[in-house]
Structures are given as structure tokens and as C-alpha cells.
Image (cartoon, rainbow, N blue to C red; front, side, top):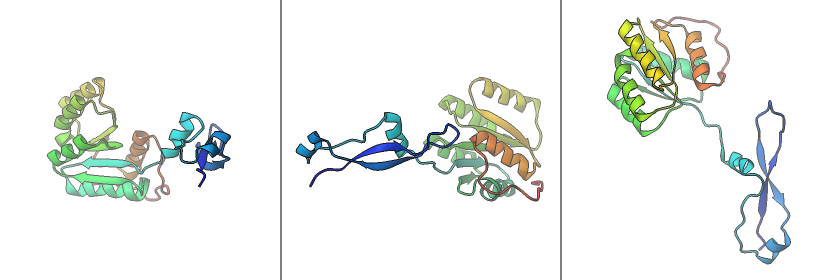
Length: 194
């Protein structure tokens, strides 16, 4: 039975559109007809071939907060007001959060200042590049210094959210950190997290 060779074909070419690719059947060449058992690779540019394997996966967000109510609220806002397909992993315990962060890199890490100092140092030691949003009820000069030093040493601290914050503030911070617009409808009513 003759083999089938596929070639990558660009469907859209506009710079403003996403580049989508499809597999299209290519006629067999004379060499391929004479060697039906030979293995074939995708033809086309390397970029086209690699794009075939890329799938947009849902954002993976790790949230660590000492207050269970705030933790649940942040998770609910992410799922219901911003990125409904997001994978949100929540932790009260700093060590469990760190275990998760040390095993895989999330798309975003949200933490409170209670555990942030220790985790920030560990993230710096690990050279983590993913964005970080930190939350606190107030900012002490020591904490602000720690955050500035961490950012100057390479930690990707995107923003600070002071509690209580409203839903829209968190959603805008998420959009900035993930560099993508929300995938749910805009917020109609905005309330503060307490």
C-alpha cells in the first residue's frame, strides 16, 4: 500500500490573524512510489511543521493565600470573570504551594505577602520566569524593598493588589500578567473582596 505524505499549508496569511495550519494530502513523488515502506516526514518549513504541534492550552495559575475566603474568591474570579478554562491550583500552605511551583512552571503565580518573601527567594534561586502577582492588606517598607530587590534580580513581579480589591482590578492584572484578554464576558457588577 503506498504511503501518504502530508504537507503543511498556511490557511491565513494576515499578520493580524492567528496562523492556522492544516494537513493537506500531497501526491506521491516518483521516489516515494518506488519506496512504499519508507518513512516520510512533514514537508514545508520547520515553523509550519512545529506550528502543527502547538495547541493553545488553558492558563495554569497557582494561587497561594493564607486566608481561605480570599483564596476561594480569587479562584472564582479567575474561573467566572476572566478565564473559564483556566486550571487554578489553590494553596493555604506555603510549602505545598512551593512543591507545586518546584515541580512545574505555571503561567502565573499569585501570592500574599505572608509567604511571598520565602517563596520569592526560592523563585529567584530557581530562576523562575513566569509572572507573579502579589496581594496584601497593607505594604510595609520592608516588604516593598523585598519586592523591588526581587524584581531587580529578575523575578517577574507584574503588579501588587491591595486588599480589598475589586473584581475588575484582578481581571486587569490577570490580563496583563498572562498577556491575553479575558475569555468571558465583561463584568457587570463589581464588588470588593473582604
